[in-house]
Length: 401
Image (cartoon, rainbow, N blue to C red):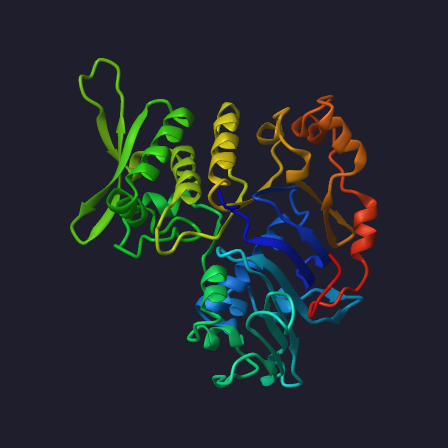
């Protein structure tokens, strides 16, 4: 079976509370830290890339309050922010995509540098390098017009050589599910990929009913473990709108009773949203990466085991990143220490690193689970790794393994 890993390494510079980070990712990665430590900012940087490619960089920044709210300030002075994503495409080709964004004198912004290489260097595969809207190097004889206020990869998505990179990056999904939105009747929408807060979940369930019934069965099986009374869920049309209809076992009733989403609890809806995000399937547009904010929210602690199993199962097909501060979710003696990245805030700056040697040894020797270490406030990042990340590694070109 081919690996589910899409992003192998993420390098960030001056993004929100993250001054710098250099994070390696596996098929399943837990970002674990206290509230306000900056876990969400790491996921948001990846989400910004997707938003800037599917819409525009301007919209992606404005949705986050503008460039001033995205870039980190150092010693009171504004800084530029940069992102580098190293990836493996589904055909096995390695590459990276990177850009940085800075301010202009008129309070605008520009993409100062942007590059993409498949195969690592100019000697292999397609590549391009752009500086302030000017093409500096490219493998292509034809290059579409680009401007410094947009990511060039959007224009290049029309070329066969760069389309796989564009599709892979726009195929990432990020979720902070909102039961209130999921509860209300929804307009029919594209159901191939679940939207961030679950605003099209009825369409996604309908899409799975038609094109991937086996995935819907998986969702229903895990949902029944989390909420034992629920026997199934399906899309229901209500005039021009649609909603979810749940089948629920009732004592003394011969057949399950049916309830629409408006009558279901936050925990049930959120559990369904998390499971739908994990197991959504679409043959021609399968998610390359799924990022979920605190999937344990509103769930009973007893549901943590089923949730961990669902995460492990989904990670065999799609790369998963989870943020959490829940000891219950992490309370598994078999949880691999290599899947955990500790997130801490020192002063106003976020650091992300693998666990320190003490935490790793305790988990590998089954002396403590990650959840027990978290309860004891002993789930600590490796300080040597954090120091190594302080090197101002260039976002562009080849960098050390």
